[in-house]
Image (cartoon, rainbow, N blue to C red; front, top):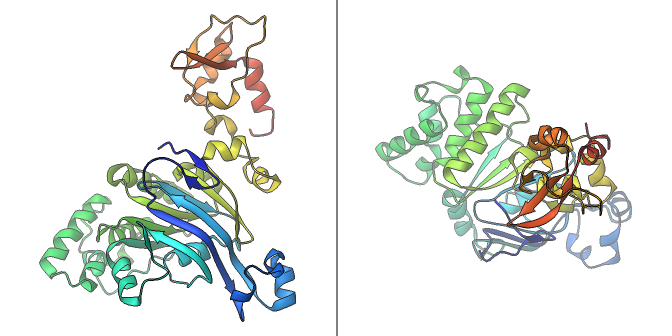
Length: 353
């Protein structure tokens, strides 16, 4: 999907599914006193030494559009998992506003919060949390059971989502009889059973081996294309973030450093921290011609092949190399720039590959 954004805020005409404003989470005594004081500008180490408090989430704001896959990534201790737990109120934020389809869920009572967790958003975590004594069908149906849905109806729905996550034939199996990837599919099915508006996925594949992890990433992409669910995905893996995310928020020390599409992060990192994150990622795999097209020189031949700005550099590489004239990058008849073999080599020589 294509979103116009400014500092994490969605600027198209649709209302955001989720809106986070000035969210803080501070652990320690009297945490509210830190916000708005000079202490709020201290580093984590300095604040802990001075007050004993720790800032886990620092003044975070962003919007998530309906149907968007919004990835939050960062190193261990960056605050990404605390953020998603604040967004679901598994951890109570210290300060801020969190709106879900326009409703500020930080002000709702426990009854309404339970309602939202049961019917409007679901969570998938790294540890599957399956009930070992229950068969797959009853694990999947568990969320419906606690919502008071009758056995026949919940089993019917459970069988539908079991088929959706491609676990046909395993409804009567127990979790211990399944591989790690299959168990995580059960976790996905359980989260989808209530037909939630938003899926929160907190490093769901970190415990899986690389091959199974890639399969599960492909599964998330397939389910997203099929269902169009809004997803908040937490990861520490840039390749996973780029593969899954419409936009990515990079966190450091509790704060969001940059929000952008994968292309924007690779092409225009906000600072050295982000640049270091993306420096080893193969740029030709993610950048499109829009990002490397340059103004033509006065002497250059402008009769060469035409390609769209959305074509990836990787896909265009052969045509760029084989063309004796510059590739023209055009959008609706407007020349955005040209790309030559020399431009391609400049990109590849930046140490990205």
